[in-house]
Picture 1 (cartoon, rainbow, N blue to C red):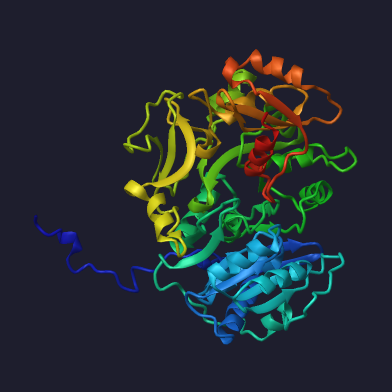
Picture 2 (picture 1 turned 120 degrees about the horizontal axis):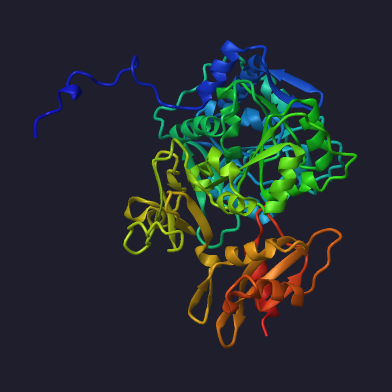
Length: 548
């Protein structure tokens, strides 16, 4: 084969090739819009110039502590300015950011700190006792830096065994705001590690690289049509998939971060009204929280606010209530392994003219790939061939492209399994519609097999959500002596509504095949993760205990 003439004498050099990294977004924003408000937090207003300087100070101070390329810096922080600074300052030092879910218990945090080999932990004052408990169980002995957020007004328990703790502001003051921060040597270099939630067995530390973070951060802005200087409200935890890469997206458009320590209805509505918020993200539970707030808390915004949600499709009533309140909801889908959302339910204008029930069916679909994702498909897991595009044939959702993780940290076996055949295997089951739109049907582990028949828990949940008395529904497998498994439905009723098991059983019989009707209904508060996902593993354990 003849040599390609366009590859001769046309090599990469510093003039024509630089590693892609989202860190450059902040540098540009500070250069072009130095006085633009980058961060709002309570009474705090911080410009892009100050944001950039503080991020460089953090990088400089970490470097003086001995942190360098490939080291891990952990962060146990809520949605505060310090968390945003960590998303820049930590990788600017060459280190890898490890954001920890603040609702984990001490044992799980200890495991993560050890597995990630943390050398520094930056912790919010509220979570210092929790970190102290975790360090008592961990083998690593990281430097501890405590951030004292003025917006936190709660009491903090004194650790049983006080250890040396550095003050975050004093630590920053020791750094150089003009520090020449480190570009990645290769855009494949790690920028963060995030641990998947609810896993058991092999550790799953998802390693993301600078290239993927750069591409998904830009993909967020393009996919969501975020205008320059958009105002983004932090209702999504930044520790969750690095806030879906939005900490970097906002710098790309010189937007404004509005931070919230806690996701509560009153501060959400206050921030929406007083700060001109244009965008926010969150699970359906966040929308429910907003809509169910007392009328005295809600505000007339006088504009449309874009809301991006993931997890299960929101019930149609919730979508209708959100539209009436001034919000436009778009459904996204992704995983920690894809840097957050990589699929979007791109809406066609003509769909808005369809009957409400047809619109609801279209909105229930996860959608099509983000611009920076090369491929997403529903494949037969045995042959790796696409399933028929009929909206019915079940297969596994698989991804391929630059916004797929590097792999699982220190776990080559799990990495090899996840990438078998040159695709990332999500473990999610779905169908592909004739128009190329993906729709999830279940996690592979959540499929209920009753008498040899596969039952999608999502299908049963969708039927239950149509009942006017049902606020939240979660369906899992319950052992059955004859059929092997049968659906068990856990239900939270809407406020002021009533229904019993027989009501819901009759409702399901009218909408589902007989073998799909839950054998048991349990009326109870449903456990969720900090990001609003229903903890089905906990419900499966309860269902086993309830089995006859």
